[in-house]
Length: 311
Image 1 (tube, rainbow, N blue to C red):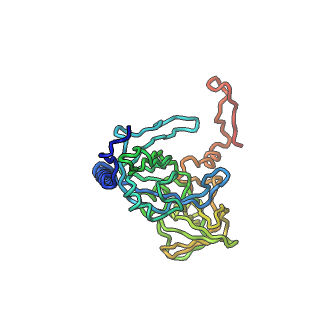
Image 2: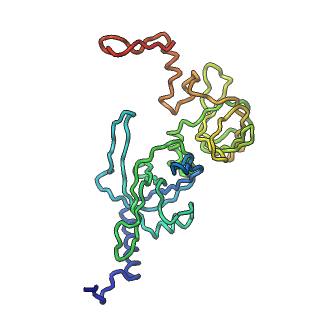
């Protein structure tokens, strides 16, 4: 038997009313988040993954959190490499609002839906989540329409990407988590660089790039004439990574200052203070203090070990 022709389940007026109710419900019971699209600078076409990416835009939009009792996923897991956080979050956003606030900007070639790999910053949790799957068919054809995107997200693991969205709470994540690079300044012109501003640089062979200025490091006690600066991830205009050598010029886009560096600080430098953002980069200091000492004792407490000497 065919459907009753006197009832039309899914007229345009019904669909519009349902969509309006969905948007109003999300605006009442949802939360404000920032959608951060991923900008792929260089792609590995063999493995189909981004080699170098950055995040330079953030769009504010309301979304509904589906979980009511906390994060989903595997939560926190202890593995051989340490503690791993696998919190998951399911968010729902209205398609109409997506097109109004984000999709119409056309930030990629395929901006008709939220894309896997893009980020969502949730101010309520002060955390960034990465979209793992964007589902446009859940719930499934309510009134013969698909008014929602359902986003399955996972806690974002920072891997040195450039983050410069203009939102301080988001951009500070890069400075807190990224070790970046530390350079010894050979000469500079006033004024000083401003924290958070974009620095452009030119290598001696003409290759250009940019980075974010973090801070001037404290002067080492061993040589008070040395001045250093710490910057974020280096992005090169040709899409490849290059070593930063002496005589490289950095220029500030906001302050107007500039400087020329003489060398790059490496992990084998004895002064661990230059790596103040990396609590695991004290290997040089550890090796110096360990000279002449045996850290693995061949005794009853460690019958399978052997004395190890750093000399």
